Length: 372
Image 1 (cartoon, rainbow, N blue to C red):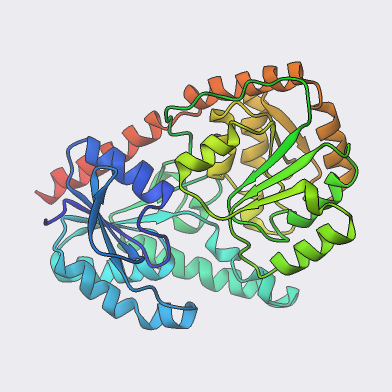
Image 2: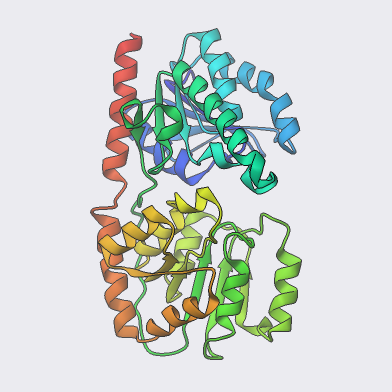
């Protein structure tokens, strides 16, 4: 198959929620032939209405950088009419491939890349690194045919709102019976990547302040190597029996698990620019499942969504006592049911994926018309 649109990834898996299950599926439903070339295992297969094309994954940033020419060759060989690339190294590979095969190039910006090196650099060097990375983003963005941004605050490195098309990570409805809140022990839920900066240890410290019947359910991977320390901390607090850890699971299974829990946690810790600008899938999946949410008060877009929907509580997530207080306030099942119903209604309406999908489809239709 020669794709109309090639989704190009250097790090995201072939079945990534945003790239394949939302964007790719929406474009395929609109009549485009879509493929996703991404690191993964197994052979080519069809899913979500598109063709998934795995290739062997590179290990580490150095290997990914060395692999840019090969990724560009793979992309150009498919001769797509348009390439939508999803990470900085795939942006560059996409640019090379587009020049070789005459494709249009769309850069899809998921994170605030000018600040990505902040945690690894001394404070005096961060402004310099941000300036260099911002210049690199602007250079690449100027050579693309379009720039798509996943959340507010990402367009400043690419020429501002006039240059960028917003396609937010809003809720993609799936058949799901929402949580029926009732009296009894409360199960707290965290979906997705785990680690210190994502609040894993704050969850334990808050759990220790809650009634002994409260459980913490985790579904995802520790991405910062802190799982052993997390388990040690849980044991030291006497929480082993109250923490339930599941491995990564497909979205349908994660949503089914969510609908068996009571409150969802999004406990990003302060000090990371990407956390301030966050708009994670897990927020909208929790809303779809009818769960009230506890979120960071400093995460501007997350807090704004929760405030507008009236579906949860924004707190200082660096303070476990305040997290625990918010969770105490959600012990009443009637209160949880009220907030959960509001969140689900907002996920199916105001914060639904349909409008975002329509904007992405219109962008590619415009590019295709110009290409012809």
